Length: 183
Image (cartoon, rainbow, N blue to C red; front, side, top):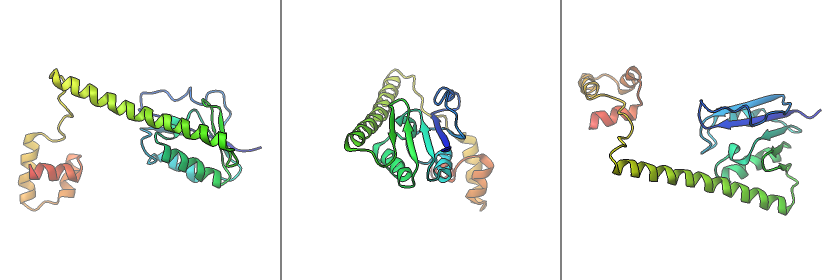
């Protein structure tokens, strides 16, 4: 029997991923709870390392795998070149590396739509933020450090404490500390 695996992605921890591959009997499901904006997703990487020739990877829809056409094509081509079949259930598309020109066209069109949808989401988000700013309702992200903490960090840094140590202690990135020190 051919091993069947699943890849599931939701954008945040409070979203429910159970419906995506519901009803399929799979050997293992790799689940990411993060944005699909790029390939840097831990479970996607684990799936790519795990899959072998003869395996089948099931994915609910194209936009769950990738949000841009280049990543989508690269991931599917990489898997197909290793003998892994990729199945997108919502679009009813299967890619084994032996697909014809019409199949390839459909795949590229669906990937382009996913990329377009992602850019539209970003555009609506920008418009929403601008509208909220005009109404005085958008304050931006909360500062990582209070002014008091920033003063304390400046004093400790002046006493030659390492930035990496201070960043770890305050739970912020080194860049945030440099911004504080230079601000």
